[in-house]
Length: 79
Length: 146
Image (cartoon, rainbow over all chains, first blue to last red; front, side, top):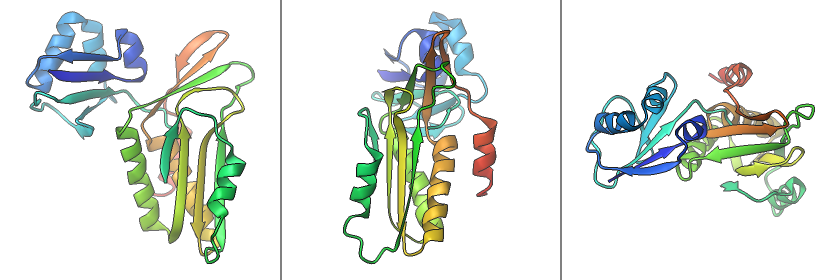
């Protein structure tokens, strides 16, 4: 199960902060999230939203291990 | 040292502690950022971090400062969670042999923290709550160092 984390405005839009999903790739994870909540899937694909896989930024698709942590990071406002 | 904290902190005590026992350092510069009330529009600031990732990204910023400036030491403390207007939100201190390095490293660290550190900021006020967008000025400030 991949652990999905949402931050900032994405968390408010989705109405949750953390969820576990059975997905073996980022693309599959996006599809699962989109089937449940199309507006969220669109927001997750918006320009400026970065994806961290196991706390490292990734671009494009990636394979997910069984214990992957996937975080969607909207544009950061800074400290 | 780099630390995120949910607890309010006393910048004076931090500065005293940071200066203690430094017979050879010569120069300490510090910066304290306070949460702004924005003329009453903000009654509470909420700062969200990604535990582990946010600290690691701040470590990268600190490493850049170490490479760029001749520093003896530095301290970065950042609040997360709920912060009331007027409370310190960030404290940065730098120690170096001479003042120019200490001043510039402190300025550098703050510019990078304000634009590159993974934080999401929500302002709560009488008109509701809103997420703060990245500011163009913060990006212009960091561009000075590139």
